[in-house]
Length: 214
Image (cartoon, rainbow, N blue to C red; front, side):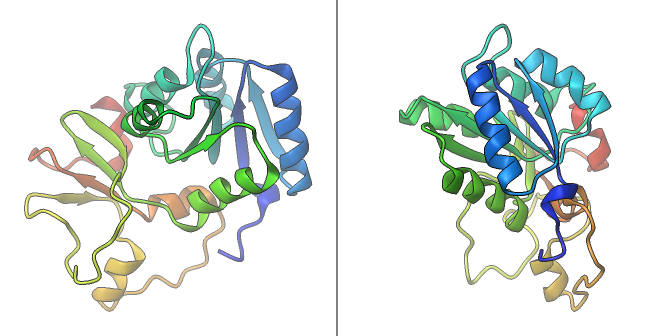
């Protein structure tokens, strides 16, 4: 991912506190991010996504009227979602396990507890860029695969016989098939798409562009 430039990545910050929005902006611009848009709550952010397609979303958890959890759920599952596959980092003052699990269950890619530091924010951004996880669609969940640990003995493309992949293969799968992708990637969106989507519902596979209609 050395060819990926931060100044080309579109970041959407969703935060109701003006001080925190200014803090994010200062930290991110120091990292050489230039394409940054701000929203004060989830509802405003969802509408902004139509005119400013983000490559990464950083959202707070506690906001009104639409909080971060409901916003992430909307992005992942709404029929009119502009991008159900966008990587989302949730920042929150809640440090308890229940909040972490709730964030995971609505489809958050990464979780960052306050107070926010440049190192912590950079770590989460680097994680969603360099290690995109395949998305999973089940009857009750759509979002990044919640299993982070990979089995070294796993050689097939799927974890279950009933799984169906939507989208292009991952790097591991391509390598196993002798078809390693070597094309240059010039956007985070293309890199994220390469992780693919796993269909675990047992229904016929859909195109990944139809994920928002589930």
